Length: 294
Image 1: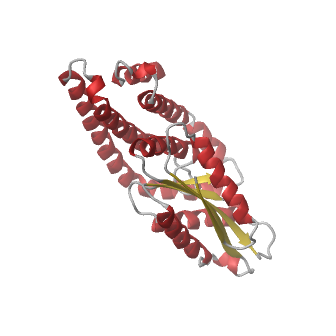
Image 2: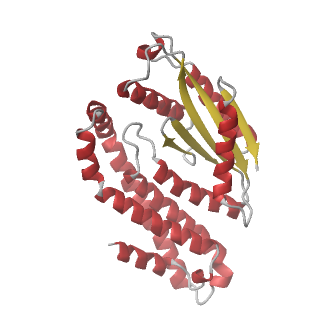
Image 3: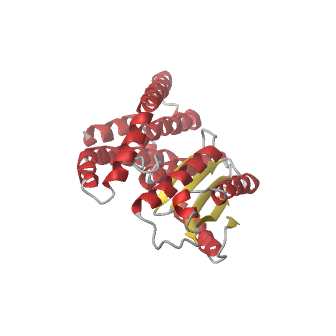
C-alpha cells in the first residue's frame, strides 16, 4: 500500500520536480505524512488494548466517549475534505493535460495547486493523529502541518507565528496531581485553546506532556501577542474544583516566535527559538510571555 502511495505522489509531481526546490519538498512531505498516518492507524488497535490495561484506563474510557460524541461531525468533515482533495487533484490533472511542455511557464500555478492538495491530505491524515485525551492534534500531525505552513509562508513571504504554552499548577497542597486531575487540566486547557483560536487556517496541538502549541499563519507580532494574552487570561481564570480547593492555581508560560521565512531558512531553527523563549518565560515564576522575532 505504501508503494502505491509513493507511486501516486511521483505521478503528481511535474517532470522537473526531481531537480529539487519547493515542489520536491512538498511531495516528500505528502508521502511522509501519508505513510505515517497509515502506520499509526495500523497500530491503533494495539494501543487501545494497552491503554485499557493501564492505570489510566478510566480516563481512557472517558476519552473514548468524548471521541464518540465527535464522530458524526468528524465524518462530515472528512467527506468534505475528501471532496476538496478530489477537486484539487482534478484541477492539477486538467492543468497537466491542458499544457504542452509548459511547466516552466506554469510552475507557479502548479505549485499553488500542489500545496492546496497537500493541505487536504493533511486534513485527512489528522483524523489518525489526534490526541486521545485532549482531542487536539498530537505532535506527529502538528509537525506535518508546520512543514506545510512553513513552505506556504516562504512562498508567499508572509509571517508565521508559533506559540508554545507550558501549563503549571502552583500552590497545590495535595501532593502530585493524580492521573485523573492531570487529564482534567489538559482537557480544560485544550478547551481554552479551542475557544480562543477560531480561524480555520490556525492549528493547535498537544505538543508534549503539559505543553500545547498554536500555529498562526499570516500573523505578525501584534496578532500573536493578542492570542497569547487571551489564552493566558483564560487559563489563569480557570477553576478546577479538585485542584483549587487545595490551594492550586494554574499559570501558563508562553514562548513565541514570529518569522517570515526566507529561502535557506530552516524550520528547526524556528522551533528552537520558540523553545528558548519558553525557557526564558519559565524563569519568571508567574505567568509570562516571551516573544522573539526572527
